[in-house]
Image (cartoon, rainbow over all chains, first blue to last red; front, side, top):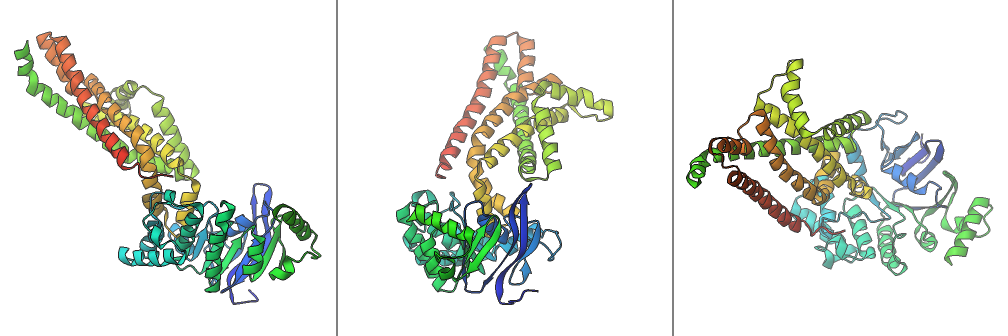
Length: 261
Length: 216
């Protein structure tokens, strides 16, 4: 039983292997309502895989992942019986995801990208969906781009549409997967500003990022992953402190500082 | 000579109607079957993928004429007697289906995986993902080879004359048999086939332009 029943996202002992390579080893973590939890770690440490397991874009071999008490990918905790396609789609609609490579639908306008889920999944009318799309495009500063195709937008603008598409569905939790990694440095700020304003509004978020300064400022807690396991968890001040006793974390931060500052 | 050909025109028109009817049946049936099997090939469980793979590779490796004779003359051996028309349409449809499977696989396969994932992430079901995200993007890549395939189907339909079906080709041959005017009649036949296929490729180009707005 979960010690903290407040946890909106409850990841318990999740393990996953690709063939003989273990990518997640007994990962456990909790995200409470309104919390922003950031996962950092060297590449190959399993951060992105973990995030993709949370909305079951990838399956895992053992353990359980629950959102609001409901097992995400499997019918019952402990069983390996996958949910039906329809069920899975319903569960995924409860989480929003923003991708490193944006993954906007190129054949739909900015508004169309946001409206697709609203009309087909949430069952809203075109007019209502359009209104919601315009509201969120306004929130990310792109009200004037509603009818632009993704190809007509800069990377930063595309990613802001990506965020709007995810939050317009009113997900319980937002998953952000290295959402600024594919952006030119001068475009990173506008995207992070949007994330920050969502955090201020109380959106629950689990994000993977290499933006340490942003992680420090915006996170409630930071999870440091190494070799597929959780190596350290704590408030940003603690985790990012230079004098940490965690050997792996210290060398990660040292390498990080050397290459990024 | 001219009067003999003019006299034969209603007969040729009947043959032409058969040609169009065979082509239409083959194109529509193979589109439905090919898309269904193509989706199975891309997204299906392993046994289904293998089955479609074997079907497609086998059919595409057999000359269409052999396939047609096999269906008409061979299948009765296992008790399946088809009328020549059904046998011809079945054989041509099998052949065309195998091609459509490959066009679909190529078109759908060219859509980045992130598109499916983004569609999953907002909670679309498999069918919705195909309908609203994958197919609209894949359509533009599917269209050019498929239209080529349609013109091939119209041309290939001339093979049904070899099962004694009076399509345009057979009608022309019969008129030649009566009039001995081979040259003008074959030219006439060629012009008719060409006109149909040229109209198709014009239509295709217009369609492609219409969908060219999808940029990446």
